[in-house]
Length: 347
Ligand SMILES: C[S@@+](CC[C@H](N)C(=O)[O-])C[C@H]1O[C@@H](n2cnc3c(N)ncnc32)[C@H](O)[C@@H]1O
Ligand code: SF4
Ligand code: SF4
Image (cartoon, rainbow, N blue to C red; front, side):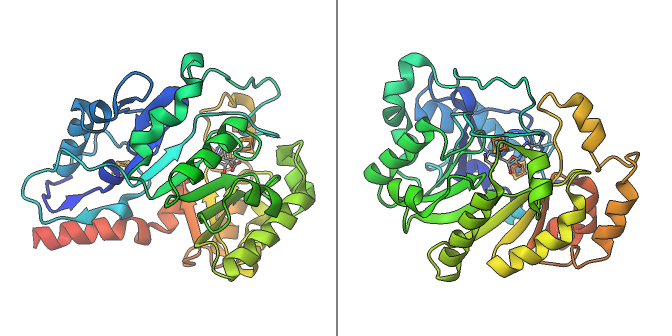
């Protein structure tokens, strides 16, 4: 990639993902292959956020060296800057992702196999009582908190307690909730003091029909999820939630329901995000069986035909992540911004 000083990525200035064991990432851990800025249980806010590893990351990105971002799926976030020198020091991040508890009330087949054991050591025992104090320097300037990308927010006592404390101590913070939807009821939202504080709601629903849902979410409750989605839809339609998305991880089990889920999302005023299957969770055998992204999978061509035969490719309310073939179909939106920026510079 040619050097272009007018492009930079805002993430290492605005986003901190505080993940299992307290590691801090400036972006999705998988995209940056685990490049951590530091650890909240071992270092201070300044040592992490403006430490050597953070500066190195910002320097590289500013010089258009993306070697620390080999899995980036969000090139459209890149922006132009008028800065002549890289900004290595940053003011505190405005968006914090909290993923400190794996506990969940169900087992989705591609997330947790039969023998999956929830790791209860993500927060050191001697730090549990001090969690909110440790997080305070990260939260006091934040505008948004997203939780919980590694477990189920409504089923986790740690996540629920954190949300309540954050809502009380930092009243200006808005929440981005990601959930399987089962316990996302009006009562539970009110109980967590989240009413009027949700900027983004994401519900994972990997099926349109109950039959397919039950094949994927073991121990789930389809009817409850749909009931809660309808409630969230009413909040979205009345302007009480700014953004509303459904997540749909594409496999050979559910791909036939892609057109129905797109239609359903339009009815409920939500965007839909299709996720490619990721094999990082000890899925070996199951992964090969259901990974329809693989060209050698027996259903691969049926999926290709299906996504070509509806408005999947051009729709602005259809987002794709982690699925190379889908992304290549939609690549105009993903890469054009970057190409345009380079094009302008080289001409
Ligand atoms: C780990 S869950 C945590 C949040 C919440 N429990 C939920 O299900 O939305 C976050 C997202 O990861 C997705 N996910 C889980 N396992 C996956 C896998 N093997 N490949 C791709 N996405 C996966 C889920 O579908 C969900 O949308
Ligand atoms: S370039 Fe991509 S992977 Fe790297 S920080 Fe920005 S969005 Fe994340
Ligand atoms: S609900 Fe979320 S955390 Fe729980 S098993 Fe499913 S994907 Fe994983």
